[in-house]
Image 1 (tube, rainbow, N blue to C red):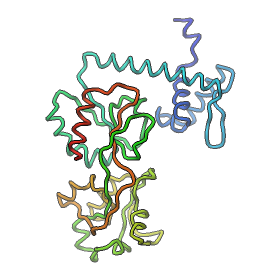
Image 2: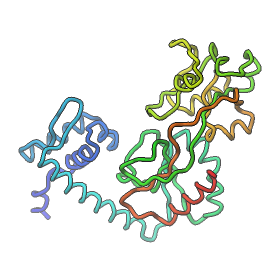
Image 3: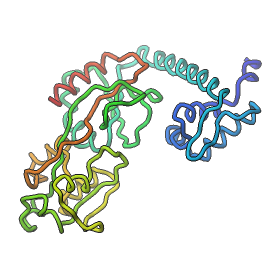
Image 4: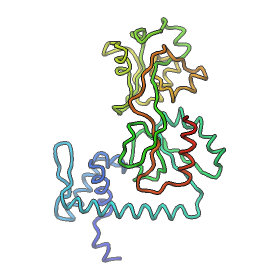
Length: 300
């Protein structure tokens, strides 16, 4: 064992290197490991000093593995995957069947949690763990069994199965609607406070794209509240702060409960869709199959 330790590089540095090499980014590696970018950079330097040669080429706004870096990346990736699979098998022996499900805050809050009790009633033997996060992490580098994602359906870390598309239209509270001037067309929205959310996803539909679809122009510095998350935008709309964009699948329950009101018949189809994603290199659990079948039936 002592000889083995002498042959191995510092394991903390090797972990940072494996993540940076796999993600081709110090920044994304830092996000995945929950540390700063500077910490990742320091660990890479520790490893390079230990080896006595560079593992990355530092280019303008990107990094690139050297030939020796590629060899180490392949070996480290295989070793870490083998350890992870073995640990997962050991943990599952004799344990309850727990299904870890990842979803965004808005999808979990507005669609999944209001419906998931039906799955638990049908499958009381399956223990559920909901992981709510807007930051997307590798499904293969975590203990997540399946993830519900919005996008194009092409992700390198998993196999995607289509769930549903969506449509987007303006919504507000009943109190706001009664106090506002009549809103019957997209042009009537001009001048109202439009609630937006900061979502770093080019496939997400915001106000600029929605209004442009109906040839409506608004002032660049229009009125309206700007929120960090879509859930905040929806709650702001329910509290009468103005008008938000409602994604039909997410706000349908709130409309049925009269907590929100749809404005105009105008809507646009989303450019992307919702998918359920399972790890590409891990066997699919029976509980995952049951949950996906329930998801598709409920979505339909």
